[in-house]
Length: 255
Ligand SMILES: Nc1ncnc2c1ncn2[C@@H]1O[C@H](COP(=O)(O)OP(=O)(O)OP(=O)(O)O)[C@@H](O)[C@H]1O
Image (cartoon, rainbow, N blue to C red):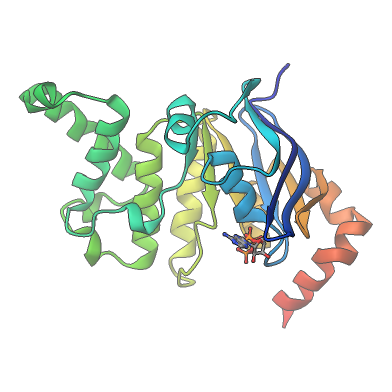
C-alpha cells in the first residue's frame, strides 16, 4: 500500500552547506512518528520541505503518491498536510475562541455572505468550542490571545491546526519554551489526538521520555542524513544511533 507520505532523495543546501541530505523516508498512514536528532540536524528544515515553506534543491515529497513539487504550502494544507501554526500566526488582539473560529472558517472556506448568516456563524463557533475542549483551553475561550501563557499559546496553535482537519499533522517541538508544569497538559492533548486514531502524526521533540511514550516509530536525523528509522526499541538498541546521538543525549539529561 502507498504510504500517506514519503520523500525521495529530499535535499536542500544553503549557500553550499547541505541541511537535508538525500532523505528517503516513509510515513505509514495513522502512525505516530517522532523525529529526533541533535541541534542543527535538519529536523525543522525537513518539516519546512514537507510543508512547502522551502523548495528542495533536489528530490521530492509525495503525499498519497502525488508529487507535491508544484504546490505551495497553502495548497499542501488544503490537500491534507497540516503544519502547526507558529505563534506569529495567532492574532494577539482577538480572543482565543475567535482565533480558532477563524481557522475553522478558513478550512470551511465559507463565503462572506454565508458567514453573515447566523446559523453558519453559530456552527463555526460550536466547532471552535469543541476544539478548545480537546486542547484543554475552554476556560480561556474569552481571553485575548496575548493574555495566554506560552504553554497555552502552544495549545491554541494545536487547536488551530486541528481546525484545518488535515490527515497529517506536523508538530514542531510543541513543548519548546514551556515551563515544566506546562508540559504534562500538552502531552495529554497530543495523547488524546493520537487516541482518536484518525491522524498521521509527525513530531519533532527533544524530550526522550515523551517520544518513547508516544511513538510507533522514531526516525533519527544526523547532519541532514537519515541515520535510522524504526520502533522505539530498535532505535534504542541501534549502535550507530547510540554512538552518534543517544548516548550523549542521555548523558546530558542525567546531568
Ligand atoms: N534559512 C536558512 N538559511 C541558512 N541556513 C539554514 C537555514 N535554515 C536552516 N539552516 C541551517 O540548516 C541546518 C539545519 O537546521 P535546522 O533548524 O533544520 O535543524 P534542527 O534539527 O531543527 O535543529 P534544532 O533542534 O536546533 O531546532 C543548520 O545548520 C542551520 O543553520
